[in-house]
Image (cartoon, rainbow, N blue to C red; front, top):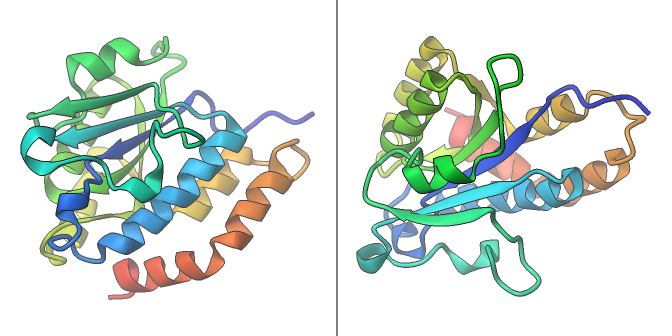
Length: 203
């Protein structure tokens, strides 16, 4: 069987908490893309790391993601933080082994583009990891912040891409055994993907 094109992946979900729903631009679209990536993570056996920002004040991760719920996606760690970056001691301690010749390929989604997503990306790059930020799965309170943040991240060395592009790049070959499962997830999410792309990238 052919090998995957992207090695050593991990999915980072940043601060998708229910309390932020009214404040974040197109928040439901971010959740829809996150759901697609979580389904894909189960098929591709990609470990999931999630955070909340100051959960005592800002509450739990939004329930439709089903993180750590019975029958839902079990995270490697679902950490609370006050730092803006997801790269906290608890997350670092839970990451799988990596090396300069075999870095992690981190897929990053969540909020806010110009704060937590930016600082997490910079910290992961400093550790030598490859970082993919999904443009159809990040947002901010003010929509004008998003393109500025993504432009900066590109300059810093982040790969800014989309959820569907990343999934097919990860597989790299239609002959891999997970292809049918991922193609099914993509097909199921077709309408939501189009809406997310239109809302977040159609400007």
